[in-house]
Image (tube, rainbow over all chains, first blue to last red):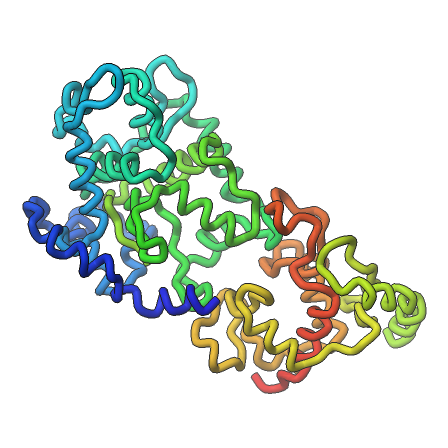
Length: 278
Length: 154
């Protein structure tokens, strides 16, 4: 109880941040425009009341996300860039052997999507796993492993500033409906649904912390509470644990269905990865 | 109302004794009788303790109250705004009304976001560690009711 309080109290006293600063400072600063500019440039009508979690956090954290030399997620992007070029698996192929980095622009902003020869959607991490299995003949990366998150962060980084754009694929509709049903279903010992907090009570304070609208605009995110980069799945599991519900297994389609629903709900909002969140 | 309470009190006397013996959140919750919008009879034989109740309310992993409510507990700085302040709860509600609102508020309002603190049925996908357990024990609920009853000022 005291632990979570002190974390939310002083999010910037991260030893990580200081440790990573020199390494991050060496990064070529390729991203000059701040997220604030991306927000201003996005086509948002006046009636659109959607808010990214970015808008609900303090100025210090916003600055941390916007500044590539301070955003801890950029360390993972940098690692992902190295992995991207490194041959892997029995095929000894690198991601870069098939894809150009430029081809990755917009990809993360449209996942989850249904891959070729399949009838069910996968998320960005799932896509990376599929490429490893089918093209690289490499073993699966563990969920939430540093390598998987780093590759996802590197790919996601290529979509920063672009509007979230789920594919126009009718086959996604049943998954979107299932995701919405999960979102609205009360569950756990506390008998709460996602919608109760993130639709009905967004903007109010839960234990002093503003409840966001739960738009997945910045995944994978660097969450100060984790002191690590993490996926949307990990974030969803945190909420499930919070309401004392049984978390779905990592490979469960339920997460992807929720993700399909949430990305549709956030359609058109600017993509921020790697986001920073409290 | 008074007559109904007395009747419920007589009916529940043996159950209240069972509640005291239980003393844990595991197992079947003790039975209780709802009269109008209240549970007139305590869930336990021994009376609740307001100072223990305050500690439960303040503890965000036991009572969880301050996640959503604010209350006159100044040492807990980070409080919720999803639900009304607990200040004045003892003026707004009787002890019996407070008891039902904590035990199972959904009996009064099916759309309430207040978790059912003393219910183990009708819940979906409860985490294994909490399966079949109530959020608070009968004793803890009596302690919280005793504390809330002391909150007379808004």
